[in-house]
Image 1 (tube, one colour):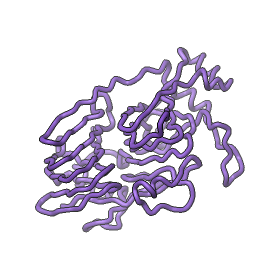
Image 2 (image 1 turned 180 degrees about the vertical axis):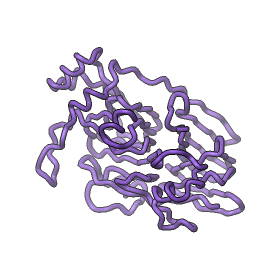
Image 3 (image 1 turned 90 degrees about the horizontal axis):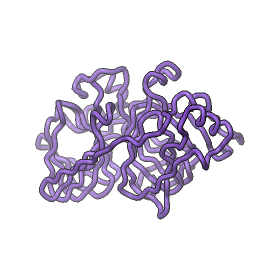
Length: 321
């Protein structure tokens, strides 16, 4: 059994740019590319295996036809989605629904997500939460466009981590690049889009005020995150979030300076993305080169593996039962 290396799917966005090409050396389409769907089984953009016996297979098809690769995990769809986002301009102010609302109204999973800040311009900030104390106050501020009073702005720098549960008002602003781990959902409710006009249609993008009112958590409360750091030789493992704080995924940072031995928890499968540096992955006596911008999945049948070199990775595991 081999690790599965994946070719991303790239999404154009009105707020995107070209940094996915210049920073990660991806061969991206022309235009403003905002999102690299790096590890995705979602129907709106699937990543494809590029090595071994499953080369050319979409991740969603592997989930449907070879569930043994995922430890016979349950669920109709591959549950996680790993992205890299390049905010050349500010994203719309938005909120995502939980599982129950999204299943009823959108026919897919809800969307809890988190961000590891890959890079941020000096003075960059993001929108994270709101200041309304009641639903009545929230609805009034939304409908009257009181954005300066409503929105909570937070300074951001390279290396920060944010957990964004469903129901959280949020937006990446100009000059921020993140690795995002999320539930596999493409449902976004826009509250405000800076009155921008889409270049293709010549019209403003659709807003979703009623859905936002239905799904925003009031009042906003920052989730309690306790980042845990474990030293292993010259290497560090940072645990950003895991169950019970996050019922959908666990997310880790592997900072490798020499050699790190790794294994799944409870026979799960593991997703990983190389953020910086280069090195080697060794499993079952086979060696694979790793470089910045690589994304791979370690199937459940591989219980142990080793990564060596000088590199930084963000990894994740599904926490859903």
